[in-house]
Amino acid sequence: MIAKLLMALGVLFLLIAAIGVIRLPDALQRMHSATKAGTLGTALTVAGAVVALRGEGAGTGALAVLFLLVTLPIGAQLLGRAAYRSGTTLKGIEHDALADDRAGSDTSSVDRADRDI
Image 1 (cartoon, helix red, strand yellow):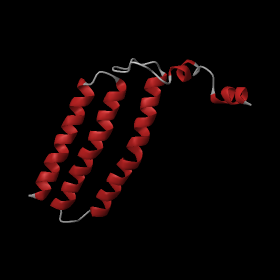
Image 2 (cartoon, one colour; image 1 turned 90 degrees about the horizontal axis):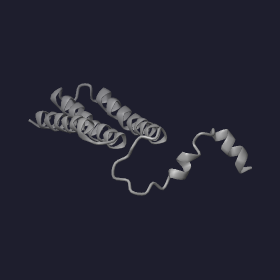
Image 3 (cartoon, helix red, strand yellow; image 1 turned 90 degrees about the vertical axis):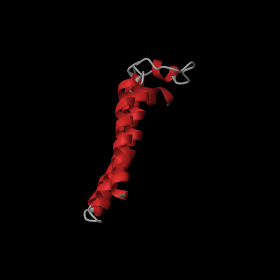
C-alpha cells in the first residue's frame, strides 16, 4: 500500500514537471519545473520501488537518488546561465539587475581579469 502511494505521488510529480515544461513561458521557468518536480518525482518513484521490493536494492536506489540530487541542481544552474547569457526573453522580470554584466559578456573572463588588475 505504501509502495503504491509513493509511486503514485512520484508519477504525479513527474506529470506536473512535464506539464510545466510544456506550459511555462520561458526557459528559466521550464528548467525550474523540470529539475525540481522531476527530482522529487523520481525520488518518490524509486522509494516506492524499494519499498515494494521489501528493501532489496535499497543501496542502488539511494545512490540513484543521491546522484540526481547532486547533478540536477548543477545542470539546472548551467542551463539557466546559458539561457540568460544567450539573451533569451524572460517573462515577469521588470528590472534586470544583471543587465550590465550580460552586456559585457562578449569578453572572456581572462580579458575581464586583465582589466581588473
